[in-house]
Length: 256
Image (tube, rainbow, N blue to C red; front, side, top):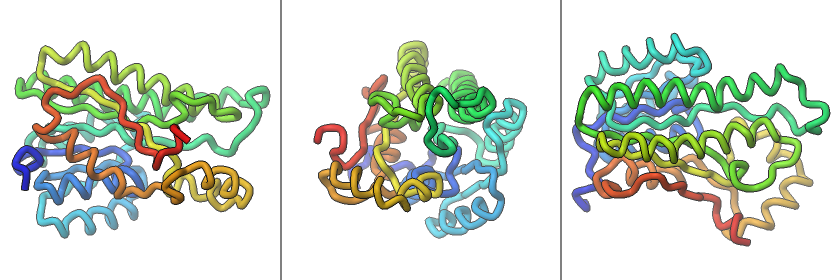
């Protein structure tokens, strides 16, 4: 093994880590040697994910946490540190979808706030807790936000979702600058179209499939495991001088 990719002795926290992209990142980190904490709101999915992750032989913690609730985030973070001792890398990955495409003119304020509360407020609460912990620990660390192609491409009828991902992208860049002096790196991941529970309904639409799949040069949807490699890289010392960046992982969609 290329030694910088060895995560032995490190602890990774992945919100929304019980399925999809989050589980793919958590699995890769565990297989590279890290102990892993996953947070999710579905206890059954948490338990199933914990069982899969435990096969790596690493310590695994699965907690129920609604990241839109700051008190829940603070409590879950304290429990994570109490159980695993520290957090070296925090992946703010938890998010919700846009609840069905609808005209901006028909978008209800309640739906706007629902999406922002999880995707943007939740990332803020999570990253704030992690950054504070890393500064106090004094050994550096890694902050990662899962954004979306919607952060950089026009996403009609999904303005609320796009706003959260654009905001997250800007926040990660600001964190990279503010916390570099503490040895903390901050980067964003921009997934393309990925098969997850959140996208299942969209990808069951034949019209959508015909229009979009043809624009992906790799000719397939992304999978959670496609994000394992970038997670290990960002957690590891191999990326020790890499911060303030956004990693586009979309099968070539953006360039075609």
